[in-house]
Length: 251
Image (cartoon, helix red, strand yellow):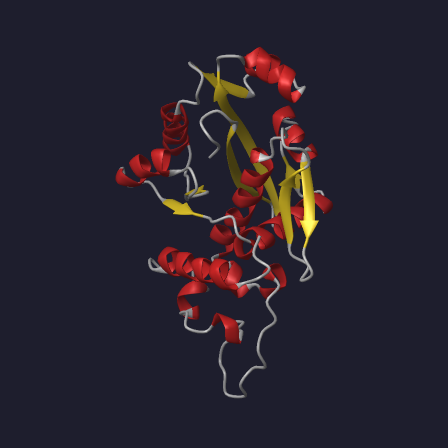
């Protein structure tokens, strides 16, 4: 979710074959001053709105009720497995959906979730396994991405310039990562190749390959590695908050 004056992106993702993905994207922004926004960002907002790639909501702020209505419509038309939100600005839309019994989860923007999400997205793009329908707004968002890599090899998305919009690219990475998880039933915490934690030396009597690092102790790995466990969201949030407070490489 973007700020009420910025671009808000909704990206749906489903599996395409054994290891590919297909995405569809919708973007929301305030209808007022659409031309001024186009001049500021140097892109054809009015043309995109006329073509249906942007949903312009009345007024000078994005109407989150329009976003909520769109998500409810998707839930009615398709077998939506879950709605995933960046919790920063999501409550206005997520809360009523959750109260209606729709499956809502959050995905915080720290490296522990976004680094593996970006790696999975990169794998799909490089392998030509991502279909996006040629959406011009989504293309523009990806063109704006500046990728930064830390000393551990974790990648993060940032804006190339302050006026750039990358909401669609971030939402696409989130959607692809969760589609992979929902499809396979595996958590990113059970895929060390994606999130860059070096496992401790395994105990000779151990019966699981779950990665464990000393700085990650105190968390229930059986829950973290099973996204279908009803306690998974709470344990994941607790783990990520711990990392944000204690990991110097958090971005």
